[in-house]
Every structure is written in structure tokens, then in C-alpha cells.
Image 1: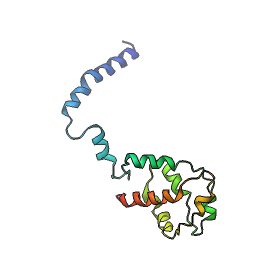
Image 2: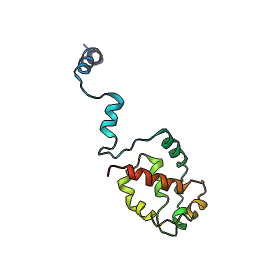
Image 3: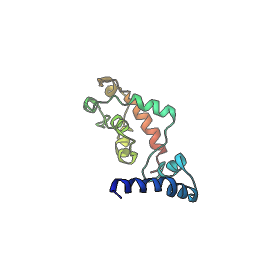
Image 4: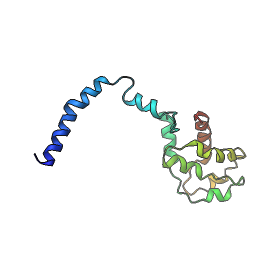
Length: 138
């Protein structure tokens, strides 16, 4: 028997017999619930998002990391860190808690938001980050 035919036979055996049998033996949550149990609020630090959260996140993706907001910030915080964190991937809020603490000194002067060439709503990003940080497990 050729290697390709042997591989196809093993694949068919696994798909038609082994996997259905293992599925019968499986107990506990499956599918989406299993994913949520394993990852949401777990060691990965992923947070669940509502539909409103997802639409809000879409508005934060305009940051091009030009650094202008960082340059004009009177608190010497790094405002660009927040939209970049939310736009690249699900953030690990543990890594930006120090920067979030620096934002506590933010007097909402709007300088960072006004200088942004892409009109990223930075103050809304800060508020969103604070809210999600409060939900974070760590």
C-alpha cells in the first residue's frame, strides 16, 4: 500500500470511528462553553466583550503610533499605548496597569485627543480601559 493511500486510510478511520467514539465518552462543557471556561477570565487574562464593547473597540483602531499624543501629554503618560493595546490583540491588562495608574493624573485636557491626526477618541479609550481593567481578574 502506498504511503498516500495508507495516510488516507488512517484519516478515514480516525474521522469515521475514533472521533465519534471519543465524542461519546466526552463529559462536561463543549464548544463555546468549553472555550469560555478555559480562556475567559483565566490565566490568559482574556475578557468577554459585549456587542457594544466590540463596536467601541472598532473606533479605537485608528491609531498609527505617531507619538504626537505622547509628546503633548502634560502628565508624561503614554496615551498612545492604550489604543495600540486594544487595536493589536486582546490586551493583557496586567501589562498596562502601571500606565493606567499614570492616567489617574489625567485632567482630561483633551490635548492628546486634539493633536491626533486620525481623531482617535483617546479619552473614550481611557475610560474603556479603566472599565475593563476593573473587570480584569488580576
